[in-house]
Image (tube, rainbow, N blue to C red; front, side, top):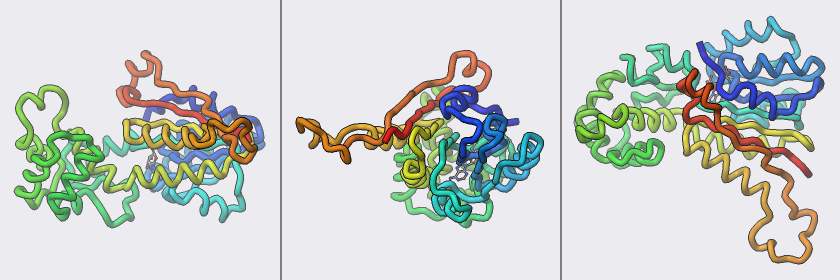
Length: 302
Ligand SMILES: C[S@@+](CC[C@H](N)C(=O)[O-])C[C@H]1O[C@@H](n2cnc3c(N)ncnc32)[C@H](O)[C@@H]1O
């Protein structure tokens, strides 16, 4: 089962009121959504996920708590449009708990794990066309190197891409792992699993994770009521960097205005960063997924 990361902290920093309108952009297996729902008896929860299996499970879980929720099967990149369809243009809180859930990772047939043999897939939304198979077997060597370097921060990206192109067709996750192993030095294999970074990179590419998150987060800021908050839980440095930069850009005065004696009201920041925190040692001991997690919280002040 999926163990929610930074559950208590995210709920605390969403600052829920009994009538809050809240959006959970990453419903998953409903850990965060369940806690939110318990605390907003007179409000409403809108929960997004693009994975039908996660939705089927969580629908049941949430229905046992209350009925003031709506599940939206969509990519959270569509947050604004989907909420508008429901007549909602302002909300009090938005949560992102990024990445994949443990069941997605653990189900062999989803092809996310480098420990389990499966067809190359890695699609969060199984109705989408592009899968890991296409990336691994159809991208040019330069494009593949780019993906593995940029999204995996993998220093052996070029060697790995060459090995992949020379071993095509590659059909399964474990075939891909063997190809990656053959392309990196012996010593590298001792430090960590040699396929970890390449798998992360391919997953990000297949699901267009960074672009989608960036656009969605910018839209999410525009949906917040005054005092409304956004909590973002990230699991790797690339996601965290996007969140940090966007939060910084909307919560600080632009450099060219800093020396003005009086800052005109319209240029004052409309947001304030409330908190940045990592899981406590106990949570990390209890849940490996929490190791690299970080929570960032921002609030609308103007
Ligand atoms: C880490 S899990 C969320 C776990 C959840 N907070 C819980 O406690 O059970 C992330 C979920 O977000 C979904 N997801 C990731 N990116 C998405 C996107 N761009 N649009 C919609 N859902 C997305 C995944 O399918 C997955 O179910």
